[in-house]
Image (cartoon, rainbow, N blue to C red; front, top):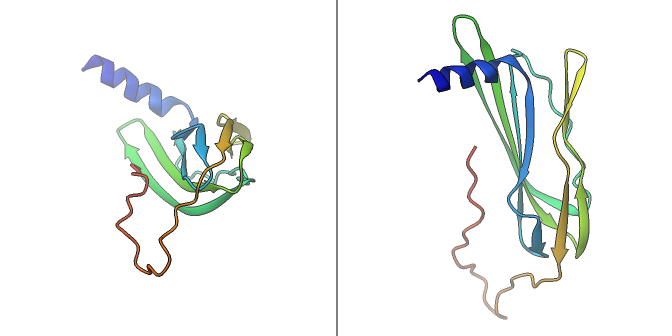
Length: 140
């Protein structure tokens, strides 16, 4: 129990920005999930600055937020998710995301994504219906 109290206290004390991708190697036609998490003791967080995702099409995006309040502490937890599809084979850099809070800049990590040649899935001629597709599972 003491461990969780200490971890909760630490999470309230500082701003943390973390970016993740679900894979660093993928074929053309596949999808990449980019997730940015921001945890801060500030009440009103400005919008973060995202990379421009050059070399990718942004298929969709989502955002969620959570606020935690205790007697002495306040924390805002924000999660942003982007579903990206690479445009062509090669190495693509995803620059860091950033956020400026109270005059201080915070940065996430950057990523080098390797896109391999691949086949975009298509349907046989004459087929107009699409089979059930299971896309990436996203947990916010």
